[in-house]
Amino acid sequence: MPQVIQWVNPKEGEIIWRYPVDRIEWGAQLIVEEWQAAVFMRDGKVYDVFRAGRHALTTANLPLLTQVLSRLAGFEKSPFTAVVVYVSLKQHQLPFGGRGQTVELAPIQFYGTAWFRVADPALFVTQVVGGQNIYTTEDLQKFLRGYFNELLMAELSKQSIFTIYGNLDQVSFIAKNVLDPNMRRIGLELRNINNIYVIQNAVFNGQHHFAGQAGQHIDGQANGIKQLAVIYRMKQCFLRFRHGKGPVSKETFTRQTKTVHQQTQRRRKRAGMAGLMQHLGEFKPLLG
Image (cartoon, rainbow, N blue to C red; front, side):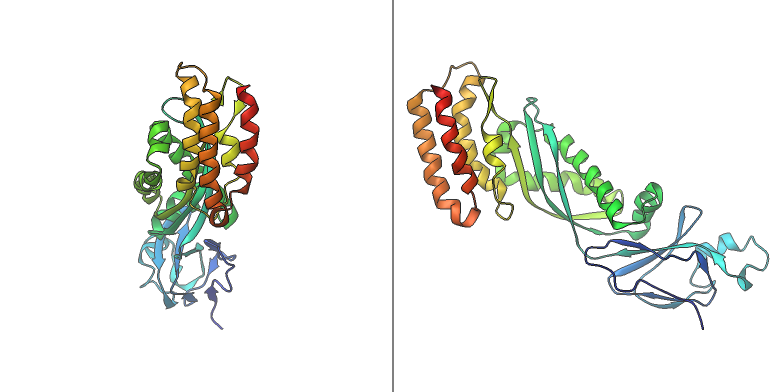
């Protein structure tokens, strides 16, 4: 009975799977589903890639690997050694998050969700799987999260805090356009970035954090960028102090707090921002 190579019953969200046997027989049946690609590696180098279908492994459909094996006498009569890596071509989710700073050196926190897919299985396996010696989805997610965070931190460090909070709807668009070419260098396509949350730890009088505390309570299922417009309105009160214009008057703070309260009440049911209201009351005593 011929050897059968197949990725059977993959778990939800799995991106890669390594066939556990490295000894491959000529004539083995390689089964690849519509949403998969099978990549053959030997000595850390990628050779042949198979798409959907049932393939009987012969020297004809393994041309690149055959060139290497042909140096061995009688290679076509004996099993050969190779690593078979299956890659899922579905769209996958990548949670991300980290700390960085704006061009003004203002500290920020960011997090959200990106969607990607493997666009070039051979390049992906070369650069990530083989290059980083990663053969499990868990390890792959850790690598991609770190890679994505570094790219996003670098981009946010070039942006002004007023650009980030003043043009909130453009944050996802800018991030996608900048990050996608870098993702393609490792064989991935960045399909979308949903719900980026950028939270600034705005400091008043060197002691208290305002928007950072409040923003942490935004519900993850809502559009964080639009929600932060509410926090931005409140934050303008405190930016005066940071630019040497003196503290905000109690009347101004009360007026701005009331505006935020009214806007937030309208958003509570659909955005889940009850936590923000809890923190609004903590700000009033800070103005004396």
